[in-house]
Length: 320
Ligand code: NAD
Ligand code: UDP
Image (cartoon, rainbow, N blue to C red; front, side, top):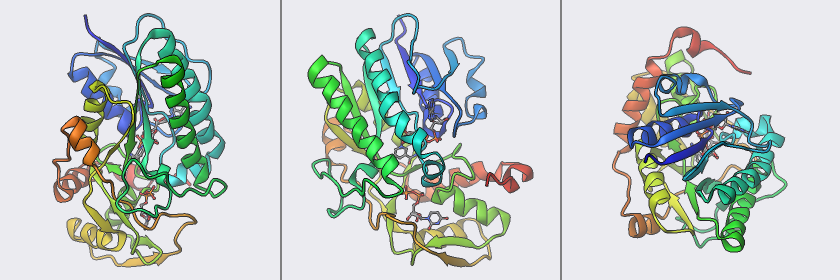
C-alpha cells in the first residue's frame, strides 16, 4: 500500500518541491499550509492528482489528520529575514506551538517526522565551515532571534520527543537554498537581485558585500531531505552546498548572467546578518551518501529562466 505523508508549508518554495517529489515516488501526500508566505500557484498543478490533498490550515492550532500517517515533514515557517521581521510572533508560534502539535501527531500515528531546521541555529558562526557539533552564536533578543530561537527550540522539542517518547525523528539543518517558485519579493538575496536585474534597477548589496553564503539548488536539497527521511539517523544533518561566495561577487555574477547594465549600490548591513556561512557536509556524505550535484551556474540559469517567465504585472507588483 502507498505510504502516506503530511507536508506542512506545502504551498511554499521548498514544501511544494517536496510535494512534487513524494507524489512522483508514489506516496499519498497531504499538503497543509495557511498561505501566510506561500502561494497556491506553487501547488495548483497537484490539485488534480488523486494522491494529493490540500488542507488550508494553521499548524499553530491543534492538528488533526484522519487515517494512518507514515511520515510528517514539518516545513511550515516564514523563512526569509523580511518575512520573519514582519511576522515575528507567527514565526515563534509555528516553531513552538506548531512543532508541539506535529510531534504529538507523530506520536499518536507512530509516524516518522523530519523537521526543517536551518543554518541559522549557528547564528553568526565563530567556527568555519559549520559542522553539526558546533553549538552556534545566536543573539536571542536580536531581530533574527525570533527565527533562530524558534528553530533551536524546535530541535530541542524534537529530541525530547525522540528520547522521552521514542518518536522517530530526523533533523535537517538546511543552508541557503534557491530555485524556481521562490517569491520574487521575499527579500532573500536571489529573488531580490534577479528581480532588480529584470526591472532594470541597481542591485542592492548590504554592507560591503564581503559576507559569504553558500547556495544550494532546490533539486539537490530535496534529494538530501528525501534520503535523510528514509535513513535511520536521528541527530541533525547539514544539507547544503559548500560552494561559498561573497555577496558582492554574487551580485557581479548575476549582472553577467542577466546581461544587465545596472550597477551595484550599497545599503547598510542588517543587524545580526551572519558574516560567513558554509556547511560542512561530511556527515551527509557519510550517512546519506549525498552531496550536491548542481553547480551554481547551472542552478542560477534554471532559476533565472523561471523568473524571466513571470508577467510584467508580477514583476512590478510590490508587497510593501
Ligand atoms: P516559504 O515561505 O516559501 O514556505 C513556508 C510555508 O509555510 C509557506 O507556504 C507558509 O504559508 C507556510 N506557513 C507558515 N506558517 C504556517 C502555519 N502556522 N501553518 C501552516 N503553514 C504555515 O519558505 P521556504 O524557503 O520554502 O522554507 C520552508 C522551510 O524550510 C521553513 O521551515 C524554513 O525555515 C526552512 N528553511 C529554508 C531555507 C531556504 O533556504 N529556503 C533554509 C533553511 C531553512
Ligand atoms: N542581501 C543583500 N542584498 C539584498 C538582499 C540580501 O546584500 O537585497 C544579503 C544579506 O544581507 C545576506 C545575504 O545577502 O548577507 C543573504 O541574504 P538572504 O536574506 O538571502 O539570506 P540569509 O541572510 O538568511 O542567509
